[in-house]
Amino acid sequence: QGTTIRSVTPASGMTHPGSGGVPLSIFIDNVQSAPLVLPIVTLGGVPCLDVSISSVAGSTKLAVKATTPELPVSRAGPLTLSVSGVVVARNLTFSWAYTAP
Image 1: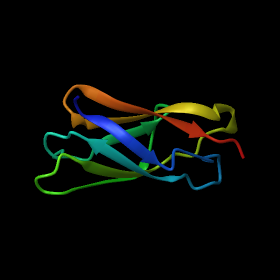
Image 2: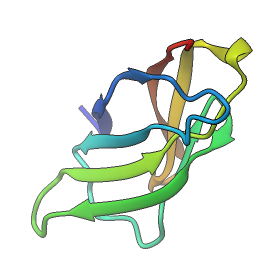
Image 3: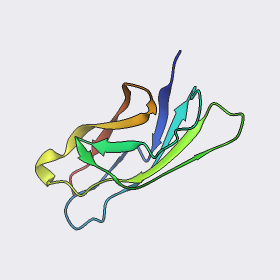
Image 4: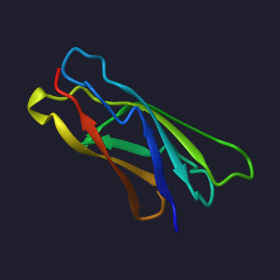
């Protein structure tokens, strides 16, 4: 099946200017080994903040925490959440819904 983003919590949120962003938990399955450096997480091509990872030794699951960037309200709607650095030469993607305030 390969490495995939199983889920993102929350799956939507308001990340407009002044919101402070939305803290996300990104759950990734079938990870061959924990990354040696922090993955790069972006939402709609804009880098997320406060990225951290946790994994369980011997497990194929990885949890990535990140905070969405504040984006203009004009970008509200479905946006691509991308995680790079977990699988060599491949971005993992998930559709995340930016809800307008």
